[in-house]
Image (cartoon, rainbow, N blue to C red):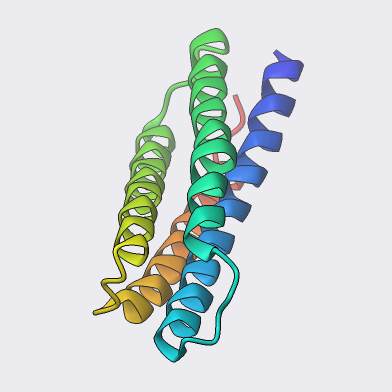
Length: 139
């Protein structure tokens, strides 16, 4: 079980980092494209990072977390709350993908404010998961 926990923590860290990095890159891409000063293909890089980095880490984090509570037979009210927060992180992940599509289509309306809100919401959900995991009762 320790190796599952290590896998879960490592993939969760990478997923959380990508959930903070992608909205920041979206914000930079939207501002740069609006000002027509951004020459690099930001949407292509964003799509690559989302598809080949963030999503695999998210799937591995969720699968290893599921294996953790199945193998360890972990139950409790805190787990339900944690899973709700993780579901919110999954929703933020999906919304990040939708914003990348909007950037590719050059639909900049609400993109800047949505990127900031997405990063703040993701950070709040990550903090919630951390607090719930660290404050769980030991059996």
